Image (cartoon, rainbow, N blue to C red; front, side):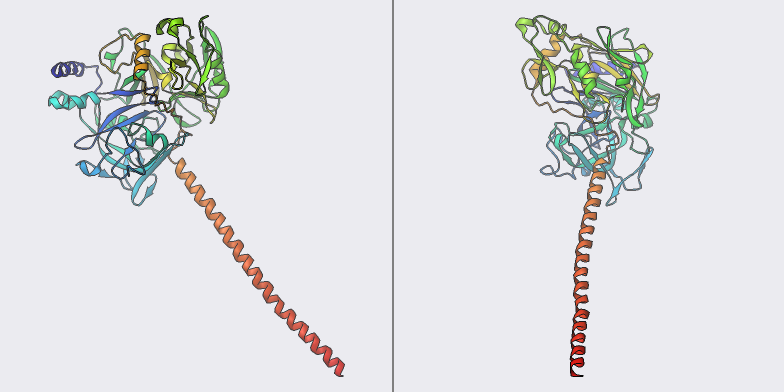
Length: 502
């Protein structure tokens, strides 16, 4: 069996159009995120990291973090700097790519990042060898030179986490991989995609994410065309930064249901606009946008139950006796059409968007939630499902192609029954919805808040000290002023006595 696996892998690696770096995505809507494995140091230490196109930092706990107090228990052991022969410190004057250390403390280049649900990471940056490619690492035991060449590492900068809170502390994955357009700029160090592009000749500044209902895959360098159906259609649009924020913003001219426009472009481009964020679980939008989407979430069958809300999300309960198979059940729901540039129509079908509720068994929901922050539309993992989305940072484009997003390399035409039944069987009821960041430039938000708190506290203390000193000084002045008055009274008495004697 092992030799068959190696032969299949070599066949894939030997094709000219196959990307050098491919990795399995692990995750589901139940889990609330998707992650890949990277291998850090020499010898390699596996680290599981959440893929996040809305963040610019890659970080995970290292040996400097206390597992009992500051960091949680995760899938993999903490990265141990002492066990890596290729580890290097990153000091305050270090430069890597386009970025030089921005913040420094105790001769270390430090970072911090916060999310709107309260999660927080902080620590310091380090430098070491990193390998991306799950299947390639597993095949390394074959000692095949072809695989070894494909398996070459790159030197990369990443965060050594020393403190994590909330979801970051309780999640299974060790850390996070920032994939935003902000990386390798004066404001952020390069990520592994940038490093592979810069250190491996012939590579494109490109990565793709293909999210399935359960698991998926990610490539770096170019598309894994072997995973696409023959005669697949590829749609390319420009991405842009919204409100001068480095995000994968897209222009949506309208959203239609049954050929009827339910949302116009003005509603979708207001405020922060619309952007793709693999680090968010749901589609988060302004209340008016959310309401319009939910209003058309109608089950078109006389046997459909009344729509209910679980976890503040609109849902319908599936009943096999009334609705038949899952394939038939999902046919009752509408397809949302997102109209974009170049006449690209992004079909968000029930097979893509229906998400199982964690509160009610057999309840499937429209994963759209109100976002209380700035007016914008965050298109999370549930929106990206079953599309292999290519992020071309060099040309600032996004390319979409339909895919079953199977973590297997074999082509398999999944039916709805396959997907939903597997989802039910593998459900572990551990959904923790990951919200979008408070803002894209979030790395220094937590530190800024701490600085403001320190400044305000210092001002209050100074005012209090000044008040006490002034009060004490006023008492002294009043006490001093009484002495002359006493002397005046004595002098008056003496003068009166002198007058009487006279």
